[in-house]
Image 1 (spheres, rainbow, N blue to C red):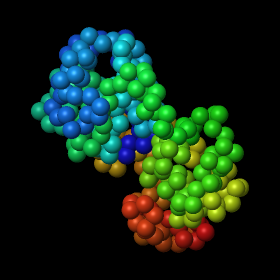
Image 2 (tube, rainbow, N blue to C red):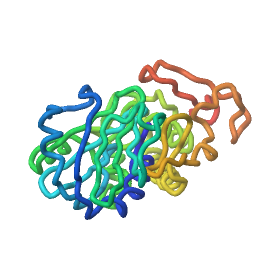
Image 3 (cartoon, one colour):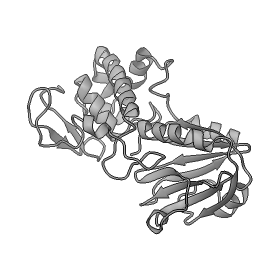
Length: 274
């Protein structure tokens, strides 16, 4: 977390509040989240910048300015928030980056465990970085045939391939688990052994589930909140993830879990996902 739906929700909420605003001042409490830029450089170059666009690529929220791009990768406990008031003491505790804006608002990156990443890139630097990322699963040009061909070449377990950001971006543990269940695919099965027809179905299930999660403003189990600080609600629609030991919603079989695929918990129905 956050995965594609959460970051997409964040940028949609922040876009109307940030675009056109000038960054007046910036503070940074810790520099261990920075990648490719020093604290001194970032704090010298952020003030005076005008925010021109806010969008998403993979699991990154991109704050475009008139000179560079602030690429925020929230990681497991990160949140990008807008406040139209001063922060409380509790809100300030984990506020790593604070940008004072020309409308007197605050753009805040908060990260409880500080495992997210902040990058300050020029256009060529961003292009070089994002060139290593795979296609967007919701891109209309990334068809089911292209998806099946791309993923179906790998000998790795299909769940691991689906979560590989070089293969296809934005899909993490939650949505991979849900999509594989919906497609009836054993998550441990080598991708190249998954029948082509099932891979085509998986493409549709990934898109359906991601779009539903965006409509529900993401999934909140613990840390994730929208740019306005509100929880998502897709957790109410989850049918497999985190439900180990509970009955399958389709066949009633007790759901099981394994850590053997990618060292993370994978919940599945051994009867439906054969």
